[in-house]
Image (cartoon, rainbow, N blue to C red; front, top):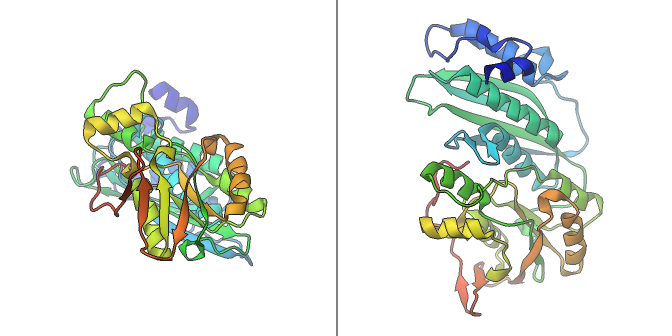
Length: 349
């Protein structure tokens, strides 16, 4: 591992302390991290100024602004890790307003005793995910807490994006008759983390769907599509996202449960753990509400991108009455999907 890290880092990792110390390293250690780890990995003209605040160019466009914190356990899981998850999650939150992500901040809460190898691996993953997502990490912060107070590593990211269109993409724009589309299969992120955490073994490993969804969303924007609402399926999964939209729009949403794509191994894992797959978090999936006349064109655009190649239609906005989500089951029977009362899977994002 050290040989690989030394090949990728211009400063040999052996020159760092092998683990972080909450006391004794002080400013020297923080300076070393900023200058010789974060500064090297995230180098760009804005960050390279090393000032207390990033100075960004002004824009005449509307801005999208979001923040989130990531505490996933374990730090590394099939298909991703804490670093890539932090980038993808914040990028996707910006994209849900139709914004083009541009800048991120990154705050690191490091626990005393965290191996430098682990931190460098996470940092490299963040750099790769940011480059793929077309964003720059332009400012940040680092704090070290006592052993036992931080569970290894937590990351907070804040994102800024440009809204380069006149659409109002939010639940208030949802209209009766809108088609409800989903960008791919659900439940993989939550089950990838839980399967590893619980030691579940399947014929093939369940990999997280963690990914940036910027390309397909911005492709729909560029195509001039009338997008009414977008929502990524994170905490609480599909059920929570649809309920949030139904409540905010005062609309009733009907979906066909069989139409929601679920992989067989994910379904099996959910059965073993007694979980509802519709409530399991994703990190690279979203729902789109578009006018009926735009549904087929939207699906064609989504299917042209690898991250959303499995896009399908799952439902319709039915009425302004009830503000509820109804699922038609396998036997044709309807059931109301209430907002999840609690978090099925803690510490998966």
